[in-house]
Image 1: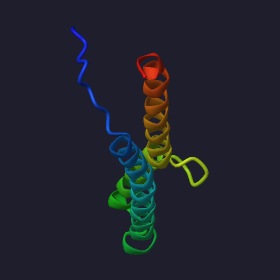
Image 2: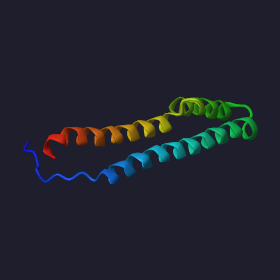
Image 3: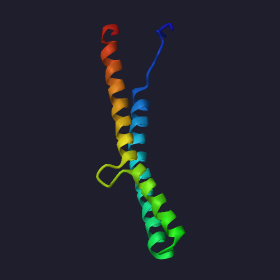
Image 4: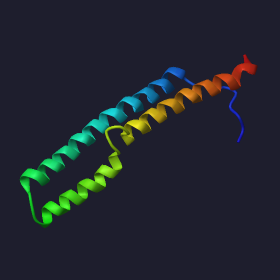
Length: 101
């Protein structure tokens, strides 16, 4: 593939995307935690026994494994990783472009 000599990378846009992913990861994690609490409340108070209770608890356990835990929330971690990747991308482009300027 041929290189585009007119390629322009908007640093501020790339940084905004990274920061947005970082903040949205934390927001989604918070919503996810609320959802897990609701499932637990339904299992404890709404349907305290029986097959439906057992199904809710099993479902909550599966969902919990996707969430991670309060010390290592996965979506927030992914958002931070993406933000770091965008920062590294901008740094790498600037470093690689030094000979051109």
